[in-house]
Amino acid sequence: MSESAEKPLLEVRGLAVSFYTPDGVVSAVQGVSFAIGRGRTLALVGESGSGKTVTAYSILRLIQPPGRITGGRILLRSARAGDIELADLGEEDELLYRVRGGLVSMIFQEPMTALSPVHTVGSQIAEAILLHQKRTVKEARELTIEMLGKVGMPLPSVCYHQYPHELSGGMRQRVVIAMALVCKPELLIADEPTTALDVTIQAQILGLIKTLQRELGCAVLLITHDFGVVAQMADDVAVMHRGTVVESGDVRSVLKAPQHAYTRSLLDALPSRRRPA
Amino acid sequence: MTDRTEGLDDRPLLSVRGLTKHFPVMSRGFRRSVLATVKAVDAVSFDLAAGETLGLVGESGSGKTTTARCILRAIDPTAGSVMFKLPDGRTVDLVKLTAGELKPIRQHAQMVFQDPVSSLNPRMTIGDIVREPLVIHQLARGEELAGRVAEVLARVGLQPEHSRRYPHAFSGGQRQRIGIARALIMKPSLIVCDEATSALDVSVQAQVLDLLKELQREFRLTYLFVAHNLDVVRNFCDRVAVMRKGRIVELAPTAGIFSDPQHAYTKILLSAVPSPDPDVRMNFNVGDELAKLDAADQS
Image (cartoon, rainbow over all chains, first blue to last red; front, side, top):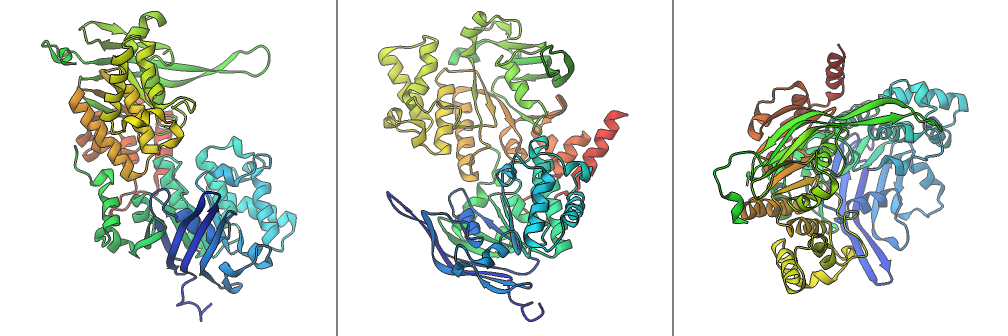
């Protein structure tokens, strides 16, 4: 770990993704580059269609046909598994399965997309443990209950046997976070994790992500369109517009002194920055 | 529309008193008995002056949408009164009217919905969607009808040729403009915006809010603005009512709510908003504070 300590955990260089539709080729991401240091939080911010989710999906190789990564490299410097060139891995590569949910995990905006409606909450988290760690079923169960407690579920052992539909939106997101972090990933990708939630629930979920990040020492790639969330959560920020990163830097300098016209226009559109009409 | 401003009449446009909506919780099985009632809206009262914008904020489940729906009689309230001043100066209690009596009054109070996808019929052209309310109320026909549709589409920033297209051909912001056009064509005095800009990107949201502001000035519209985004409310509303568990816990001018919140819940709500200024730290600890508030409610 020490030799790679100075080098960033994840380095994305010149990433390009295109979708080959019957009506022509749509270039969703062109030449995106950024890096995330160990234990740091990078926010990828932009409006719908700017390519931030496509960028995140590329890291986990979740781009489905007709989409394809057409260029660039995605280098994960894992402390546990060494350097991995994610863009070069084959679809069926054993290493890819180790990366997904093990070294890198993801939480989504809508928790129900990540949860199976016909399995109990506990069995879904335990499944992740059994897949990625050499544990017995009993150990997996104990770990799951411990993790559910960590993410703030009241009565974790009861929750283990509940189905997702029995939980509120905020509680489901806690379960998804538990599932994502139970294998102690080195990188957590959070795609609009609180967009569908009320502000008070959002505050609790963001606080939870921060606390667990500190505890596990994992890096976070936070995808959001909310500059408030960026300012409160991120160390660094990359602003995306039409498939490219137009500006990046540490949060304070980008938000306080934006250099690019697009960043300025986004910040000026914030309700809190606009003059009362 | 000028007649609305005539007369020295300072009665509020809308006066809500003790508005209450209870939903029964039924038992399962054949013999359905009432187990409990959910007090979705619990004795809500407020006034809305003509030309004013009142923000109704709260979290999901706080009863803000149910309040808005009860006012427009989209659902029937359990109790309370909603006094609505008509353009001719009469005041009616919307709660007491029968469906037949209500119909001619509906043109004066319109609604703009959150989801621009589900609130527009995908099989109707934009022209048909915007025209429909005038046809239902038999307020215009022929040349006049076509003229009013063209006029209102232009006013919300859409092109005349858009009227032949279907909703799927439009972006979220444009669809919301269509929803606004449909409400505006009735020349209403009150528009209830239920999370009208919540589904939009910030820059598009800003444009739609600007449009609503311009229309308000031009047509002296009164808005009841239901929202959960406190930043939007801060910029858009004259006064704000904060709802929690079916009740209004605080109602004050916008500047006052944000600079000097009185109720403990309002304070917690405001502290939870992530500030875009990295030097203003948000409160991550709202869970415990809300739990304390709930405990205080119990005792």
